[in-house]
Image (cartoon, rainbow, N blue to C red; front, side, top):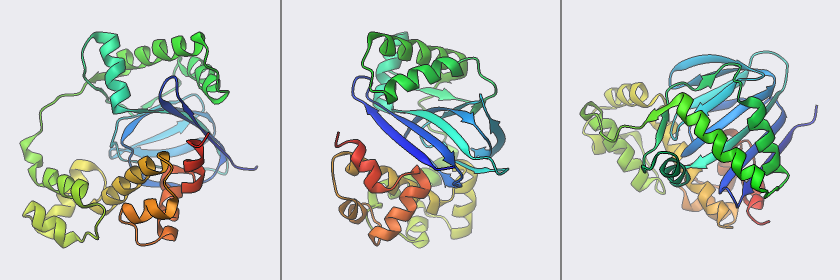
Length: 269
């Protein structure tokens, strides 16, 4: 079966919609800087999210918060058909303000809702986006559906930071500031004032992802923004800390499922 990978940016809703068909690819442990609301149309996969394991199949709803680490791979020979919506935090702020009158962010406690009754509505709305339908109905369905998902499966995200995470917080801040530069494990240890093993253990336990995987995810997410602005893949690679375009392209497709060029072309229309 031929792989089909489609991505559409909806200017009316200001969200991305992905549709993957016939996918056999394994996705490594990574995260996104936006919310993901997706579902399995066909197939069966092993999914790990925040150190919790799931078996997902047709009709399951998938919910990722920004920076929820996750990975997945096939567990049989059936290919995966999958659709999702990607919603950036600033858009989610606006949605929550319209729903409850507060600029807060939701936090989904479970990554998988098995056999969700909302899948049929989600698929209809997703198809409208893929068909570039700018109708009243599409916007109405989107708002009602997102409000239902949040009210059923999310809590409001607490603002406070756990002080027990201070070393990890320092590492995150260092990576966010220096991702364009070569970074070593020693650099992170110096920033957090902690030894290498203690850092690896603490970071992986708290974040569910290793420091190296975190760094690569940050670089990919930063590169996505540059590609959305029309930057050439080779320039995006150099500006986000990748040593060469080949290295960048391999990581990008492993994490996103598209090549940098394919992703850039979405925003040229």
